[in-house]
Length: 336
Image 1: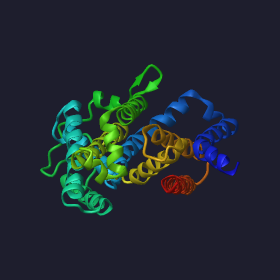
Image 2 (image 1 turned 45 degrees about the horizontal axis):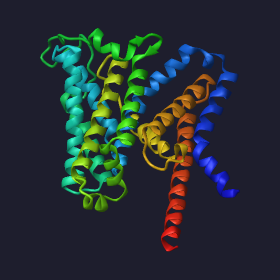
Image 3 (image 1 turned 120 degrees about the vertical axis):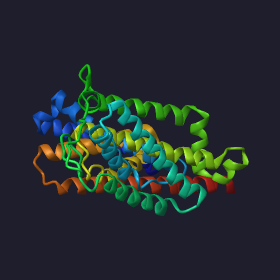
């Protein structure tokens, strides 16, 4: 009975908490029930969720990426620089940003896979390098339309309407960022759960030596995971750039902790016990519900950090407890 109750809590705990929070806030705050407010809440959760999907990709191969926030911030500055200073169209800015994200992921892979530096140290180093490089490129300034350049001239470009549509556009009543978040979640779920590529990623994360013995190219899959993480972080940065409409040098600074949190929460959701797309998406929704509800109730901003910390604490407790139980069960089966 005790084990059965634990299994129910592990499997449905975060789903139940999310539903209870939605019911509570909807019952106590009329604005929370408004469809526009709900879409707005999910729209603002999209960059965090997409960056969290990137962290999830690194976690599938047993790694972690602490550079996602810096990569997203770099994407914001590069998009702004390309359009405002370089006077290019939004499509070119998107291409530059995605290429930059892939290069950041490749750098992480070079440090972790080739140089064999521990992922925490490697991606932490990359984070500081990217943050510094971003400031060097933009001379430590935020980039905005009609800004004065170093030579005294005015920046010739601006954020194009097509680029701003990435955040401000809607398809029917649904905001574009939310649609993009859902599409990426579905794609990654399908890849991880229903393709050989996904099974190989999980195999590498579970036991790289065993994966190598069965013919999986471990280094290639680890590299692809980090490159995927860099690209997804850059997509999150594109949405942030379209949202604020300028190259704010501080953009993305707070994204790292939220992205890591939703990815870790995703491991615990539904008792799966491994990184997964739908769990990560639910983690992003849970944090968005909590932050929006706290804001509507007029609670101080620091209560949001406390709430996020408690959610992450419970997620870690459930994840590691579940992991230990599975280890005990496996060991008992082998002994028998």
